[in-house]
Amino acid sequence: MSVKTTKAASQRSTMKYRQKLHAVSYLTASASLLFAAAPAFAQSAEPAAAAADAGAVDCAAAYESAQTERQAGHFRAASNQAMLCSQSTCNQAIVRECISLFESIQAEMPSMVFSARRADGGELTSVRVEMDGQPLLDRLDGKALALDPGSHTFKFITDGFDPKEISHTARVGDRNRLIEVVFGELPPVAGTTGPGAQTAPPAAKPERGIPVASYVLAGVGAVALGTFGYLRVSGVQDYNELNQRCSPECDPADVDPIRSKFTYSYVALGVGAAALTAATVVYFAVPAGDDTPSAEVGFGATPLGAEARLRARF
Image 1 (tube, one colour):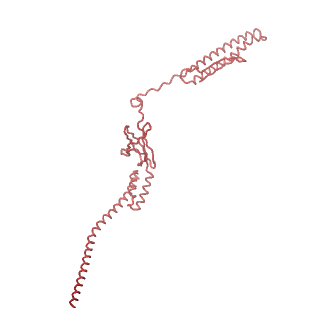
Image 2: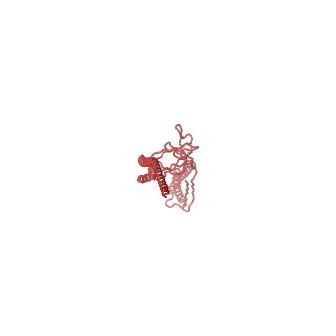
């Protein structure tokens, strides 16, 4: 009985020893793992903190650079820097400032729309554009392009035509300004341009001649005045002769012809004066070189005597 009891106690003691040994071994292994992992964790945490510090420095530098570029008039570079510091990885205070700065730059940045066409009106799109000697566009697409303010020289290049170069000033706040060039203007007439070109003398104005109508009217006027003079002189002679012979009891048959001569002389005088006046008017009114006759003269009898008709077209 005592032997069995002693053997059982010995077995229980051995089992407790083995359990303590396993526990110590587990603790020892866990401690070893912790000590081994600690340096690696420390090494991985240091680069992360350094990267975070470096990112914060880049955001601040981008904000400062955006302000500097804007003051220098480099709006496109300033806009890029303001966009860089507006990312969510930056400090929220810097992000707010950068967004406000970006919007302000966009509102002030000038933009231009480039266009090209042929002299016959056809539109050209396969055109390269250079600005201040640097490539700007590979082809024209009708879209507005943001530019830095200031004076710029643009060069348009396309196949089949000589390059076109123009200068324009981009003004702050000037949006969507159209810049257009025309390729293939009509060549100048030979001999009209160039340092040694001789210009043709101006065409001589045609010498002003006397229109035929003026000759006709002047002739009518001269004949009418001559008729007036003849009738007047003849009538005065007949009147004096009749006055000496039978006045104051002359036969009406002898008086009527004298009275008619005076009447016709007055008509001839009016016709002559009108014809000469019309000849003068036609001379100044008809264009030089137009010699088309444009006058008609006629005479006719009336119940009270005679009449003369003059019609001129000029």
